[in-house]
Image (tube, rainbow, N blue to C red; front, side):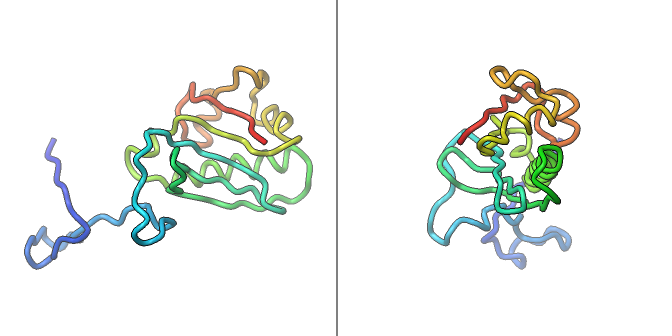
Length: 152
């Protein structure tokens, strides 16, 4: 396997790679200039309700947001909210690049009173030992066995 490393600050005229871009854009668009990058080994995908939408974010342990997605839902029923949460989680995970998508250490649902019902709609019966199963893995892209937690 031939690995090539590129650096965003490299000048394309100094290192010609056959028309390839000089650097790979990093998924840190939500980080303020000069704020630094994550040093945490924790990467969680968090979902919460934001009005009439589900918002999912891939967040490091020290608060760096790598990807986010928002999906509207039609009504307040748990099935509609669960579909929106599942879709938002899937889109946020898809927004992660390369090995980051495989590094998700937990799925956290911050849905208040609706959390238990959404877990059931996602096919997770035991909230105390909740984990991504194979069916949910296929839908959201997070590895089977990854813990699922309810928060707030």
